[in-house]
Length: 247
Image 1: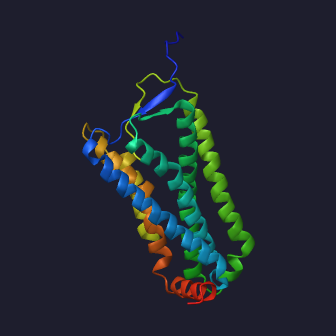
Image 2: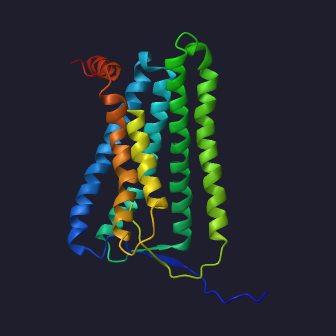
Image 3: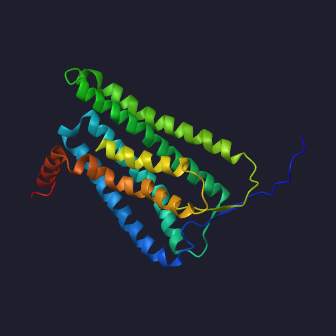
């Protein structure tokens, strides 16, 4: 079989919403504010779940993992996005693209598995409340959380390697922008819409907005949906504040 001639790709140009220069500053400020909210909300949930012994349960252990995951996920995508918004050079090296892909894909795959694990935890708590402490013992729920990370990272590594060894025969311009049921709908719904909708000439902007939804909006809402409206968490926050700040 005769092989074609392929030029080596050394960098990719990130277009995204740069064709709308009037929106760059607005998007920069919006994403920065949302990123700060993500860091504060998820960090608060992690700290509270560690300091309050009443929250040392499987559910809050998984929520702590989810919060840490959201911090890592958004930290791998939002800071580079903010730099691109304010930079004249909107490009990324081949190695940088591979690293971005393996990290983002690994964390998003881990979140998919972790959401399924959290659904199973709630299923056991509702359908087998008397046996729940026995079924969801410490060893089991720690293994479930660990395997969520392992599966996500391995899946990401395999897919990234298989993608990066392929020859690039197209252009190197990329259109890029960085209750439990509610989060699942936001995360899976936006992802399914992005990858399963019919092809159309006018869908690039909608792709970028949809990508922004599950990369930024979902991690920002997770602490509010899961915990900060929860009575147990509110009481834990009051206890921690009174204990350490003498309020």
